[in-house]
Length: 199
Image 1 (tube, helix red, strand yellow):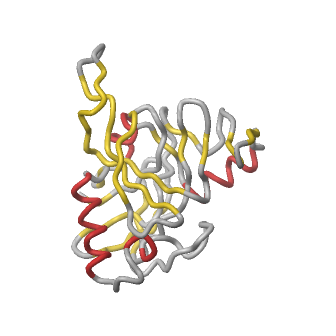
Image 2: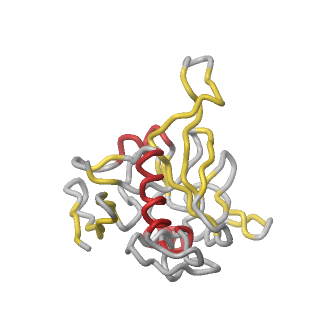
C-alpha cells in the first residue's frame, strides 16, 4: 500500500499493487466538467421514490465515493502517469483475484470494501471497491447496491451516426449479491465511477 498526490488539486490517494498492476485504491475525485458528485444537480432514486439531497449529503457522497464521470471525461480525468484502465486491464485484476482466492471468496467479495455495501466484502487485496451508484439520463441510483467503473474500451453495439462513432463503452460492475464482477455496455453519456491504473 502506498500513496499518490494528484498535483492538480492536492488530493492524496491510497494506491495498491495487485499482481503486477498498480491501482488507485480509491475512486477518482478530481473535479472536472463532465463529472458530478452523487446527487448533484438531479434527483436521487431511493426505493423507487425520488428526493433531492442536501448540500451536506452530496459532499459526503463525494468524499466517500469520489465523483461520477461521463465516458468522454473519464478518458482524460486520470492524472499524469495514470490512465483509465481498458477492459483487458480490468479483467486481469478480476482474474488475479479469482486465481488467488478460494471458490467461496471470489473476486466480487475480495475486491469489495468491508463496509459501504448492504453485503460487505473482505477487501483481501486492498482494492476497496465501493458501491458508489451511478447516474442515468434522469436520475442518480443504486448507491449502496452497485459500483460501476468505466473502462477505456469502446463497444460497437450502439452507434452515433451524427458523429460517426461509437456511442457506448464497456464498464465493470460489482453488485451486492453477484459472485463475480461482470461486464456490460452503456451509453457514454451516463455517469460512472473511475479507478485509475498506473501507466
